[in-house]
Length: 410
Ligand SMILES: [Mn+2]
Image 1 (cartoon, rainbow, N blue to C red):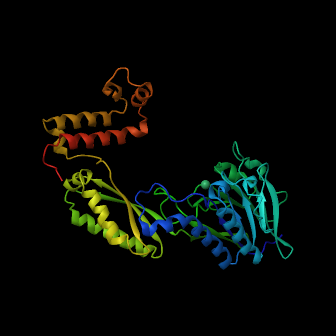
Image 2: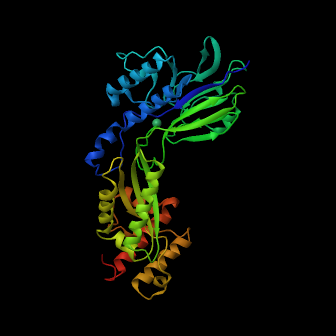
Image 3: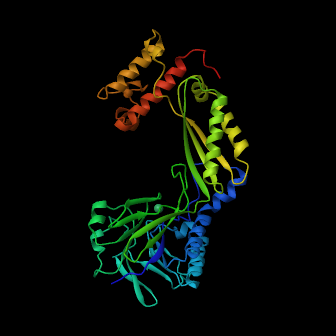
């Protein structure tokens, strides 16, 4: 059977109920944009579907928690689904963690172009263009418990291009072993193509990042399938706020001026990359030298942050600096380890602990009371391996600061 070329839009994780979080001091001029960002980004998804004239839209879950979003959420979706209906564009929607089909408020009517996949088993639907079958969709909403049964996503017969729609983690080996052409997944919140071909396994991510960790562009994906069933993915950015992590490393000779210059350059190039998007930048500074020490103590960090906000955060679209964090240095000047001082002794001990991973930290001996609370005792007695290096680094920084004497006041 020959497939027509066709095009669909794949999106997931709108999370209309969740506004940006893990951000302090939201300035007044960005407050509305923050609150509206999930809706504006989702609107861009629907605008894209219309502008690109897609045959249908595939939604892989977590569009909204209907109760948490309040009436606005379902009304918003129903309104945009209707815009698609008016243009004859079908919607295939599998529920995720927060949007099982049963949670849709019964008082709000879903337009007829919207097909929802049940939770209990994968259901098969055939999408037609003027009565000719174009693609087969097999979808299931995420089960309330347990993992997806991928072995149940099975096309009844070969021929038609088959799209599986699901939300949540899945083993790539199982996905690969299936007879599906395109796995339309959701749930990761970041855009990922887990497999490029045979089958394509793709998660478009959320249309709008919500927190510093969700950095970089976010959006949805346009999928073109040609007459020979080749798949081409095109990402469309829809985020109205873009989170960005910027790491800078300070060397011995760094000055406040050189740092400010570098930060300004970073901001300029970020703005060039996406001139129409409001940027939310988290700065991560690391390194050694006098400036690093001054940044870790005292008011300099706060001053820099205030300066960045003043200079770049007030324009629209803004480049707002969310936070400025100074990481503990990975090493200290070699001479400090040699010196015959408390600081030298302290650093040598920490270096020894760093180099001998089997050596216990014995933090419990630092607790004041032998009868200190059992959970705390338990916690300090069992520092996980992954946290050990960071803990020692933090301890070294604190010790160096406290034992440095008077030479590093800011
Ligand atoms: Mn989600």
